[in-house]
Image 1 (cartoon, one colour):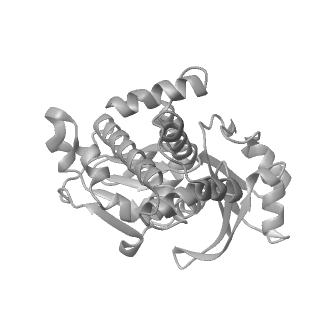
Image 2 (cartoon, helix red, strand yellow):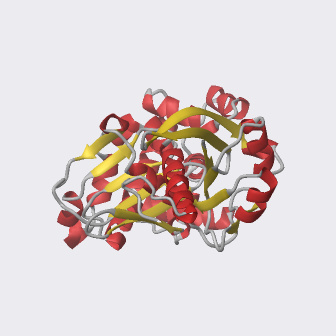
Amino acid sequence: MILAGDVGGTKVHLALYDFTHGSLQYTRDTRYPAKEYSGLEDIVREFLAGEQVTSACFGVPGPVRDGRLRLTNLPWTLDSRELSHGLNIEHVFLINDLEANGYGVAELKPDQIHTLSEGDPGQLGNRALIAAGTGLGEGILVWTGSSHIPMPSEGGHVDYAPRNEDEIDLLRFLKQKYNGRVSFERVISGMGMTNIYEFLRDVRGMEEPAWLRDRIADEDDPNAVITELALAAKSEICERTLDMFVSAYGAEAGNLALKVLSIGGLYIGGGIAPRILEKLKDGTFMRAFTDKGRLSQLLINMPVRVILESRAALLGAAAYAEARAAQLSGVSPRAASIAV
């Protein structure tokens, strides 16, 4: 049995996989509200309830150094050696969450992906991965000539680059709100959607009806309210919020694609994309993605795909755990599409 984890700033998603007959078989999974627990060990113990596993891998938001990191959006410090000892699991690995997503891409079936733009699917080369959720993750899938090797990145924390008057004023608003530097994560993430909404309300003076203000105040996830009303065309401020959000998302995806030279395609992961799929389809994302001046044709030729499977990072973490544990144990791992 293999334990896979996707550790986010809001939720910790755990799953068990059985590795039999040369493939990973899903067993069960549970999501836990991260901020209600003092650490990852407590969540894992509750999930396993005494069940034994041979190896575990957790995709985590942040740079992992020597099996250790301090999380960006949670007050936790994780150490693979301490987790291995505390949980009595022989092999425990920590990898960047976008790295886990990258390994998961190779495990996905066609019905778990939506193609936003066909581009030129015959091109072989690097791929890029961008994922907005609680934060903004970015990753690279390096083409070796025979397979793609995921590489972590902290590209979501680069400087926000506004492209028009609205975004320039949004930058000014956010610089004041955060008392200084503004990263892309402040715009393209759960907090980013809220930030855009507040900017349109407080700076642009868009109307926030009392019923909308009450819903946002009363419900646990204001972004779910904004998204619902925007997609249903029931609120002008919510529609404009989602439009600015998706446009910025597409622009930064295009920036990443240029830096990675991802002629093999761009994948959009994270929890937000599947929920706003209909908006992603309306052309707003792709217009911003391909709006790169003299290099626009390069972006037009890149396939763009949305990951629909919520367990993609778990699949990747499980695949990584199986391959690395087999490697360390001197056992030949499956001939999988994962190189470690």
